[in-house]
Length: 119
Image (cartoon, rainbow, N blue to C red; front, side, top):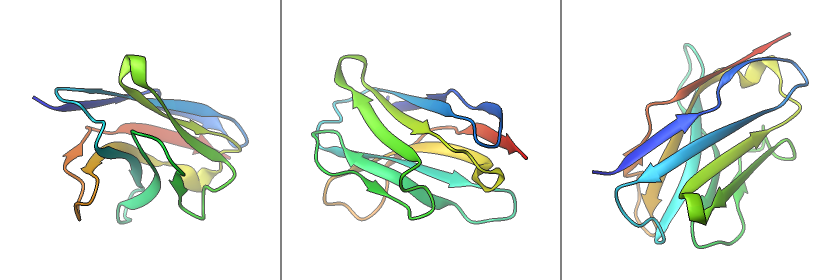
C-alpha cells in the first residue's frame, strides 16, 4: 500500500523558516515525480514545487521561487520542502504528491500538514 506521510508543519512568524518532510513508502518511486501542493482556506489547491525522484531540474511556482527548495533523501525515501522567508500568504495545508513520469495526473496524495505564518 502506497503511503505519503507529511510532517513538519506548524506555526511560524513571517520571515521564518520551516522544513516539511514527506515519507514515501509502499513502492519504488524512481519513475515518479514528487511534488508539493498547497491549499489555503477558500482557495483552490495550487502547485508549489516538483522534482523527479531520479534527479533533474526542479520546478517551482513563481510565488515561491527563490524562497522554497525541494529535495530528496533516497536512503530515507523522503522528500523535503525547505521553506524560507515565509509570508502570511504561504499559510495553507501542504500536500505531498507523486506522479508517474509521463502521466497526466498525480497518482498519490498525502493527508496534508498545516503551515500557518503569522504577521
